[in-house]
Length: 164
Image (cartoon, rainbow, N blue to C red; front, side, top):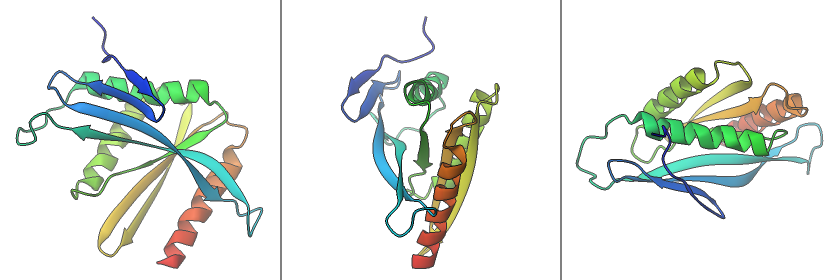
């Protein structure tokens, strides 16, 4: 028996349905960071990755499902297998005020899955009009553009803070 759910791929990402009947959508969107070494018009292309869940029974308590975790982490690993010179940003959804819990959960999953220490995770937390915005840059330690992408991520965050 597989420890992953069956995935359906489309042009924006992947979908799967877990044993509870919840439908997960995992998607990739191209994004651009401001490149501090090539101002004013320099950018570094990067991906954002996100997922959402349409609950079959929204009133039922959501239970931890190891197979859901493994499926999502498998998609993340596959991203790096197909894009070894890229990185991605994960932004925690804050529409239901559970963004901090998502950050904690994702951090735990990342640490458990990164036992071979192949990846780095760089964090950001912005408070804007009372809303928390958590994000993480995930990048391979072997990425040839690692320093430039980390600098661009941090610079973009600083620029966002100054604009607030």
